[in-house]
Amino acid sequence: MNTLYKLKNINLNYLLNGNNIKILKNINFEIKKNERVAIIGESGSGKTSLLMLMSGLESPTNGSIVFDKEDLSKINEKRTTEIRRKKIGLIFQQFFLIPNYTALENVMFPMQINKIKNEKEKATLILSEIGLNHCKDNQYEINQNQLVIISNLSKFYSKNNKKNFFKKILKKKNKKIGFYLSGGVGVGKTMILNFFFEIFNEKKLRLHFNEFMINFHNFVFENKKNKEENNIDNFVKKLKTQAKLLYFDEFQVTNIVDAMILGKLFKKIFEENMQVIFSSNIRINDLYKDGLQRDQFLPFIKILRDHSYENELVIQEDYRKDQKNFKRFF
Image (cartoon, rainbow, N blue to C red):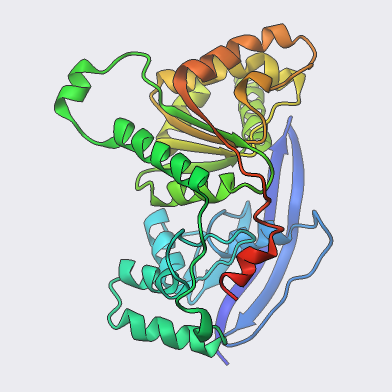
C-alpha cells in the first residue's frame, strides 16, 4: 500500500509575549492510500491545528509533511492551492453550500471551476454512491435578509475592486473599505463572509482577532529587542505585503490593552488601503461596552464607522439548530 501522508518531527509553536507556546510536539505518523484514519483528542489538544497543517492552510514551525510525494512545507502557495483544489477535500462544521443551488449543482460547481467534463453525470454518481441521489434537486434556501447582505457585499466589492481609470482620479480620501456584519448567533454571518472571502481572488488573510493581536504584540516585543521604533507602521507595512483583504471572524474586544491601541492600528490599516471585513455578534457602537477606560476606545469606534459599511443581519431562527434545514436536503 503506497504512502499518502508522511509527517515527520512536526512541531508547531506560537510566540506569546516572548514565550514559546508549544501547540504540537514531535508528531510522527503515516497514512496509506485508501486508509481511513480518525484523529481523536480533548478540546484544545491540537486536532484542528494538525488538520490545518495537513491541508496546507498553515505551516509547521519545523518538520516535514509529505503529501503524495510533495513536501507541503517546501512548495509555494500557488502549488499548495492547486493541491488543495484537486487532491484534498475539506469538510467544515458550517454548511458552506451555495445558496439557491441544488445539491447536484453544489457538487457540480467545483468540477466546473476545474473544467472537468461530464460534470453532471459525475456529480450524480457521487450523490448516488453516498445515498443522496434522492435529494439531488433539493435546495438549501436562503433568507431574504441574507440576500440583502449578499447584495451589499457585492456593491462593496464593486466599489473597491473593479478597475476604473476615472475612479482612481476622483477617489475620495476617506472611502469606505471596510465591511462590518453583525448579528445574533447562527444567522449565517460566517457563511456569507466565508463565501465572499473564498471568491476574493487576491492576497487575503482570514484571522481570529485574538491571534491577530498576539502576532502584533510579538512583533512589538521583537522590535523592542532590536531597538526599532514605529511599531504600528512597520507591522501594517509587513501585513500589507501578505494581504489586500483581512477577514476577522467573530470580532470582539475584551482586553483593555488591545482596546487602547486599536484606534491607531486600524487607522494605519485603512490608510494603507487594506480592505477589512468583520463578522461579530456585537454592533460597532456596542463594542467593548462597559469596559475599563472605554472613553479611550471610542476613537477606534469612530474610525471603524467612518471607514466601514455597517450591516446587521436579523433573523429569528438559528440555522444551525433548525432541523428543517437538514430536511431540505435530506
